[in-house]
Length: 357
Image (cartoon, rainbow, N blue to C red; front, side, top):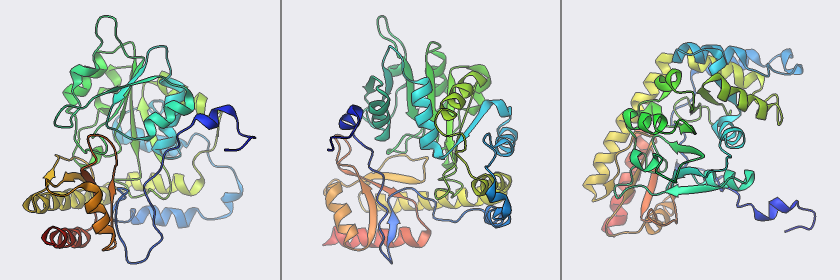
């Protein structure tokens, strides 16, 4: 507390990001980073761009990046917004599209920074419970007499569960709420989910948000983007240009363009993560864990005889970091990022030792 703070700062509950420990010889499976490096072409592009042009401001609209993304997804550049990581893109969406008289609807188990943004932007929200299997039910997001959403946001696949919502059920939510913007946060969709991008041309109320941090291994450069009707994109541009007109520097834009153009490397890395996830899921189940179906680069698992906090602590003692959430309904679970095959095998070996102790 400080007497110089603005009044709103006293009321904020800041988001706490996943731990980034500065320890050597650590197996880090807690923040869903890709275990494989960025495209070599992206790294080459960074080196090639590190020259005298850095004295100039970067392209504020990132036109080349928007163009290659539009080509990849079959959209027009005017249907794409790019920003400094998907978190900031989502922050612009919260401010520009999700604050209305009726409450914003979101799952009760989702990213913890969604309520944080609601506090920052004074957005009233309502939590919609996941079902008993930790899944989103589309019918729960449809208007009822005397009850409708001001806007809707959910992650698909959801976080931290990893469970996907089929495309037809996403469409039920979007089509059933023509009065409301529906934001689908698809940070993990490349690992086995089905994107809602194909619905964009049919529904002017749909905004789909992606990131380069997961499947494209560029978490350290912060690139995110949104896709939707040009009217929605204009709202994001208006917020961005009232905040920071240059969110992506020259190096970041060059790396992102090269990454999109290197489709073969992208597919190779995604396939490797999916294969390791499948193998790890089977190994965890053999140890007695319940593992929720995942289309993300992590699994969400719990053991019937051991608490989540207990297991996370025991793994930390063995220099393995996973994510535990001390929250209702999910405190028994561990969220385990998919690492390399070797890292996941070391995790399984450690868990085997812990369970046998």
